[in-house]
Image (tube, rainbow, N blue to C red; front, side, top):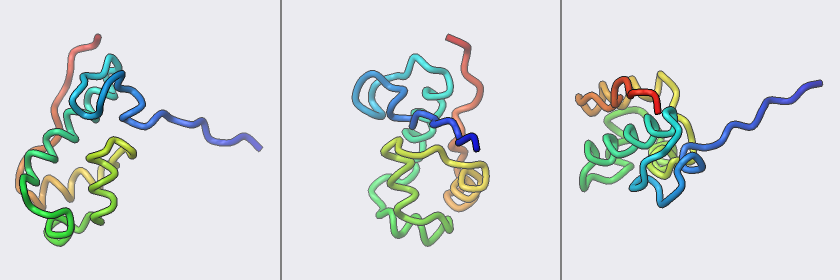
Length: 95
């Protein structure tokens, strides 16, 4: 049986500290900018309070912010709807 190919996590696509350092990988850069947008939208509120308004588990929020996971479309939609702010950074130019 063939296994799934291991995909690098977002923070692994960034050569320096996550999320401060831009990624040379276009997809990694989208993830990094999404994480920064999410952090800005959260502000000084707790992850548990954001979890309550978005329906996204607080540990999932922490993992997105730390670049440990790739958020799926449903998670992105819940976050944007719950926070009432666009988080997706839009199309980036190819490197």
